[in-house]
Image (cartoon, rainbow, N blue to C red; front, side, top):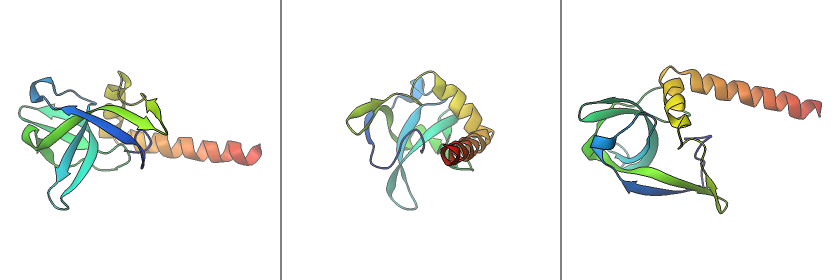
Length: 121
């Protein structure tokens, strides 16, 4: 879920309510193949299931039934401080960019620009 949630961040989950499922929500689920908990963003919603995708993944995951979702990420903490960006109203915009595969391009461009600025300073 980088760059919004990074390795080492502490996430707080709230119970997931399928009726309140919304585009851009960040949810936790157990991936059946690896039996590992994963945190991804909802990029589209259908009756009874949602499509999810990691913010740093080029491809969308399979449809996930509401029953497979453990909880919704309510809080992210990094180095003792709350990280709010990515969980507020902007989450809908981030989900739309992810679904169209534009978020990864934007992240890549930001990293390239950052490296250019760092080299020149």
